[in-house]
Image (spheres, rainbow, N blue to C red):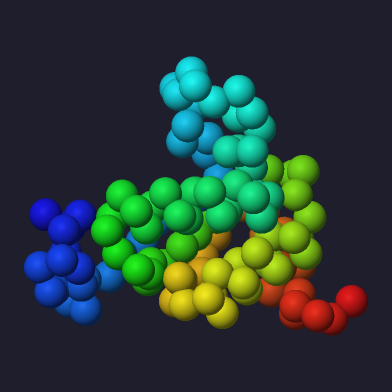
Length: 115
């Protein structure tokens, strides 16, 4: 199983991709603050990525992509959060899907630490 890949010693032979944006905890009635689990905010990314790492039993993801653009989170917040997880070694490559070209263009022009 892919889930136990790192434990079995074959993690380096796999390319694992995952996405975030959608509320993966929507069916969990024990969570009152579901707003923290949706969208592209830094908090949502952190929660989603940590859950993926735990479920997949791996220390890093090869490709993490933004599943869709939420129009509430700024490009700067998304790019800073993505930059942080790459610097932490939790993600190697980034991607995006279901997003207008103008958002992708703006994101490609953004450099962390530059206004």
